[in-house]
Image (cartoon, rainbow, N blue to C red; front, side, top):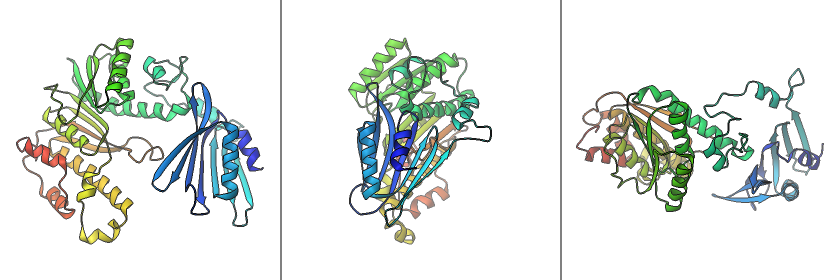
Length: 388
């Protein structure tokens, strides 16, 4: 099979992704990822080109995409991997320019495609496919008929994965009164609306949810949608996490992708409120990357990307231990596949006991070893020593 034939046949609504790698020269992109997207009701293909440390995106129609891919494989790359509903293809280019195309159809012994098999054993999501949900339709995740938009399927899975985390801790939340939830850095609020729908519509629980974000236009849009759906106990406010003082008691605190120390301020607020549950997906852990220093590990930390990852893991590990010291049973869980984002860890903390006085020696020694002092440790100390 020729590469052009493969692309003409598989580039369409059934395409999942294409990954082009194995750069031949130092010029141009080092890697290209391609996936289908729907724009204004038309099918396009988004090309994400990696150039150095930056990512560049272009949306192309099928014909232009095929021309671009053929040119890339002729001049710039050695390998292409394609996945679709129909199977998997691999394209290899030898040093002499010979192109080899291999195709493996998604078939089992009975002749059924994997697509139909997947349908037969379809995962049961908390938000089910085929059942229209107003906010998912307005946010472009679902059609009015309840069909998941192909380009938004990862978002649909992410929302359901998040609700599964909540479903696990539901017994920890009050049953006989209103539950108050605060979502710090709510953004476009896919997950905020999903939480409200889950508690009110699926579980019939009395809940009040507050979303907080810095962007005025986002807050206006979200409040408008809440009114449209009749979500009278869902409110959005413009504000900063560090200075927020609107509540005296909160049952659950959610903070997803709050940048750097904004996560620490949100966690400290949750501890001060004695929140029963904390769900946090940290992002951009820059603070300890600036502080971290360890003579014995200096040869490894000479490499910026390794230092950055070590600092991120250290940041979230210390956050988890500080929450344990504040009386929480804490887990660090995978939120979504690493394939979709490296920021894929979720800290889930459930209140279990009273906070301990003072930091344990092993935690102090760890911080001293790496010459770091995270903001969360300072914030909890400022609260009068509780949990620290």
